[in-house]
Amino acid sequence: MMGIIFGIVGILVGFGFGFAYFKGIYKKKLEEALGTAEGIIEKAQKEAEEIKREAENQAKEYWMKERKKFEKEAFEAKKELEKTSKRLIEKEQAIDKKAEQLTRREIALKQLESDLKEREKAIQAKEERLDKLNEEAARKLEEIARLTREEAKQELLKSLEQQVRYEAAQLMYKIREEAKEKAEKEAKELVLQAIQRVATVVTQESTTSIVPIPSDDLKGRIIGREGRNIKTFESITGVEVIIDDTPEAVILSSFDPIRREKARLTLEKLIQDGRIHPARIEEIYAQVESEFEEHLKKIGEDATLELGLSGFHPELLKQIGKMKFRTSYGQNLLQHSMEVAYIAGIMASELGLSVQYARRAGLLHDIGKTADESFEGPHALIGAQIAKRLGENDLVVNAIASHHGEESPKSPIAIIVQAADAISGSRPGARRESIEAYLKRIEKLEQIALSFPGVEKAYALQAGREIRIIVEAQKVSDTEAFDIARQVAQRIEGEVEFPGQIKVVVIRETRAVEYAR
Image (cartoon, rainbow, N blue to C red; front, side, top):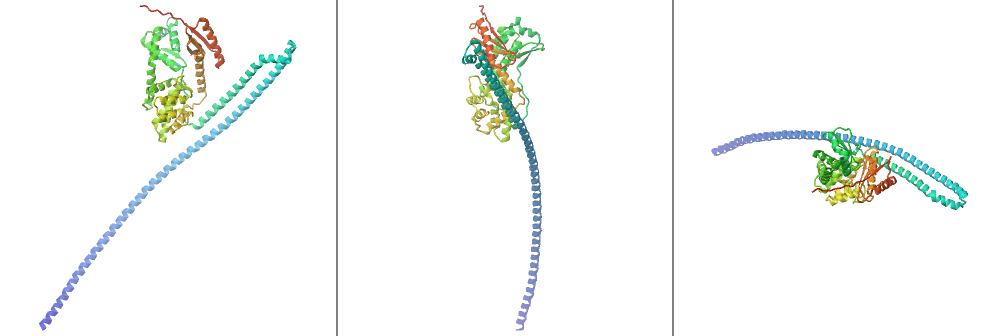
C-alpha cells in the first residue's frame, strides 16, 4: 500500500517537474517569438519610414520641378504680354498719327472744295459778263444792221453762245475731275499707309535695252549703206536703234517690252551670224517670232520653279512668261506677282493654311493683264476665266477673281491674296501713276494711227514725241499719205493730252521683187 502511495506521489512529483520544465521551454519560445515579432515590426516601421521619406523627397522634387516650369512659363507669358503690349502701343501711336494726317488732309480737301466753289463763282461771273457783252453786241448790231433786238440776239447766239458755253462747261468739268482725282488718290494713299507695314522700293521699268557688240566696227554694218540696214530693222521690229559713242554697245528703245525683247534677240542673232542685210534681218526676225512662244514658256517655268510650284498648263506658263514684259503702276508685272506669291505664302504659313495654294493664287492674280483684246471686262475676271479654262483649282480661281472685289472671296486664301497684292503694290510717290498715264498715251497714239484704212503698222518712238506710220503702197497713194498724216495729227490733238508736240511721219514704201532662175 505504501509502495502504491509512494508510486503515486512519485508520479505526481514527476508530473510537476515535467510541467514546470515544459512551461519554462514554452515561456522561452514565447519570449523568442515575441522578440522576433518586435524585430519584424521594428524593421517594418523603419522600412515604412524610409519609404515615407523617399516619397516625401520625390514629391518635394516633383513640386520644385513643376514650380520651376510654372515660373518659366509665367515669365515667358509675361515677356510675350509685354511684347504684345508694346506692339499695341506702337499701333495706337501709328493710328493716332494717321488720324492726324487724315485731319490735315480733310482740311486740305475742304480748302480744295472752297477753291473749287470760288472757281465756279468766277466762271459764273464770266458767263454773266459774256451775257452783258452779248447784250451790248446785240445793241450795236441792231444799230448797224437795223435789226430787231431778238434778231440780233439770235445771230449772236449762233456765233458765240454755243462755243462759250461749251468752253465754260469743259473748264468746270476739268476742274471737278482734277479735284476728284486728287481726293481719290490721297484717300487711297492714306488707307494703304494705315494698313500696310511693309516698305519696298519704287520700281521703274526701263524703256531701253542695251545689246553688247564685239567691237565698234559692227556699228557701221548695223547702220548699213545709206542706213538701209537700220531702217529695215526699225521698220520690221518697230523699235528705235540708238547708235552713239557708247563703246561696244547698241541701245534699243521702245515703250513695248515684248517688241523690244524680240528686237534684242534678233540683233543678237544677227551679230552672231555676221550677215547683216535687209533680207537676213527679215529672216532672223521671223525666226525669233516663231521661237518666242518657247522663250515665254521658259520664263514661266523658271518663275514657277523658283516659287516651288508645279503642274501648270503650258499655255498658262506662256501667260506667266508674258508678265515679264508687262508693267503694273511702274512695277514689272512678273516681279510684282512673284512678290505677292511670297507674301501670300508667308501669311498662309502663319495661319496654318495651304502655302501652295496661296503662292499659286498670288502668282496668277494679275494673269488677266496679259490677255489680248478679245477678252472684255476687268482683268481680275479675265484672269479667273483664263485660269479656270486651263484647269486651275476653284479656290485659286476665286482668289484671282476677287482680289479687286469683282467677286466675293470664298476662302481665307482669297483674303490673303488681296492683302498681299495691296502690300506689294503700295509704292510711295506719284511716279507710278505718271508712268501708267505715259504708257496709255503711247498706246493711244498707236491705236489712233492703226484705225485708219491702209495703215499696216504704227510705232510710237522718241518717248511718244514721234509716231511713225507705215501704209500699204497698193492701197494708199502719196496724196492720201499726206492726208492720213494730217488726220492723225488732228485726232491726236482732239483725243490725247500731251506736252510739247508730236511728230507724225507716214511712210509709203514700194518694193520691186524679182527672182532669177
